[in-house]
Image (cartoon, rainbow over all chains, first blue to last red; front, side):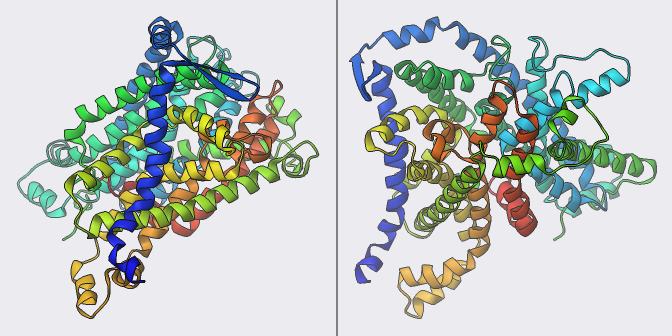
Length: 291
Length: 282
């Protein structure tokens, strides 16, 4: 007991540090080693060959990666922009209603908590060409059916729509909590000074929401970049490469093509890109844990 | 001091439009849930013909749960084991770490380094590490074991748990623990008998979220498990990926997969919303 007490400060942090060392730092070091190797499996054992430049060459010559990067950029920018706008509008709206706040909050939490794979299943049913609800509705009002997930021009939009449905509620929850935190007397003072509701919204409330907006934007951007589950279920990147995202491409390189060395090189590129993004946006991050 | 925009209520026509828009938003979110729930009670043939009126049937659930070719009960058991064990472990590890960083004076590089790393690790796709995990687990014999998957899920949920628990610990007035120390409590006792009981709401919030995130996790489980250790999301993906998509069974399995989240939501919504928005707003 005495020893436990004496070293409490140290041993309480130790398990977390060990876990990070063994399951994140060590694997990342391994990524570096893998990225300069070509790894083959024979007889259940891994064989490593030292090929320092081969994977870098694969990285620069990867045509699918180019398509995936473009798709991912479109996916992230379009879905996050719409999610931010919708989430903000909804938060401002619901905060000004006297009833229904609890209901809105309850319903909006649902998409965040259910498995993304279940969400993929829902939309796969709704998008179905032959019997999905969207095509039923379109046919009923006299338009032809749309091949939501099977046509190269629509598939990416269809996948973006799912992301908007999935994550607008998250933006709403963060911004709604922030709107509910705006001091009432500030708004009352503005009213007494003759400001219209529109002016109060644009000149007072939204500027006060800036920290929350920044956090929502950064978190959503990175989470959108990581999107994998729903798209894997809906299209697996197809048709062709029209919904191929960087995350899906990484999965295929690692686990379908078994190119562990090149997969590691790709992983490192992704990690470097994310750390760079974090460093650039660090000023805007007001994570309380970091304060 | 009061807060919120109650001083700016919508009135007249705006109020009606406002409520109308809120109802539309709520329906948009609920709609897909209703659709898949309905589909899960349809025979495959009723789904394929797009019938709106149909005789509800339990057969999809029976097929998914008790069908001869279905392992779904085993998948549910795997998911339940992985989610509960990893939640208990991450609460223990994460709470201790959070308390240590919050209460004791660590060198600046330790705190910044640790928290900075949690942030970076939280932000990079798990898929970047699944490859090295796969190789290491194969060598250690942990591939295709629930224990291996549990370890990865503990690591995955550690950043969130540490942030949440630090936030909750910092809301406890330091005077309370100081008083306990003056009364002769050791640091360990002050943690065990004073800080920990006061942080129970945080433990509930972090526990619920860790359980749900582990239950939902797909990309790691997809690659580190095989037939006997596959979790629920992996099983659902199999239904969807078969050559002939089993729509009705996929729907039933997906509905079943949402049950834990709905149950926990009903029990601890306050904690969940607090947990999801805390740290991001303040």
